[in-house]
Image (cartoon, helix red, strand yellow):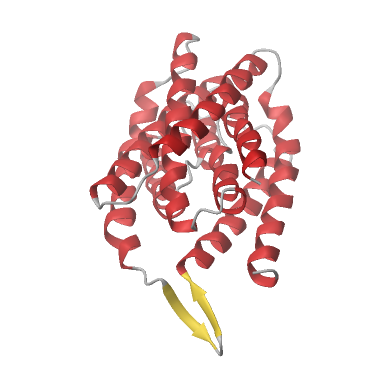
Length: 262
């Protein structure tokens, strides 16, 4: 299963390079089911893998003129606060076993995977649905952008997810960015959020296997290069429905596995 996991890691970077998100949606299941890493630790590993991969991606997009630093900072700064609150204050206080029903125990790891799978399916439906074109507002709504940034930080903090599938729509509709600029700016936000979250985990003493992380990140980086090259010739918006169906199937599989095949 580990060999399949290494191969699947290419898709993490491929997704980030093509559509500016979706990497963390794949990272958690790959770490938990293919590498047999505990869900709580997998959230920390996901922050590192997605964050470092996004960094390489946003450097490439910067060279292509696709980064909007001001919009990224207005989004990322509120995200950082909510990430730190979740990961350093709330998350460590959640008990390993949350509650019991008869002889069945609901663990923190189970809750992480269930919430993650529901989030996957919601994101998948959003990617599959065809949206009508909405006229862009004349100015960037930085207040709403910051509010959404705070909400995305909660998701990032609890699940170790970069939140690109939430960041992209926010940048399109509230920052008034074209698709390619939204993708590049999303990668910068994902890098900031993920690196802060991972740094917080280091501060509280989370055990980290750096050699493993560097191998996975290197493979994801290869996928990122492929994704960025493909994005020059392929409209990422057209790939979103295909990726959405894939994510939907994975979300259903995770729920089924966690509930019925534990």
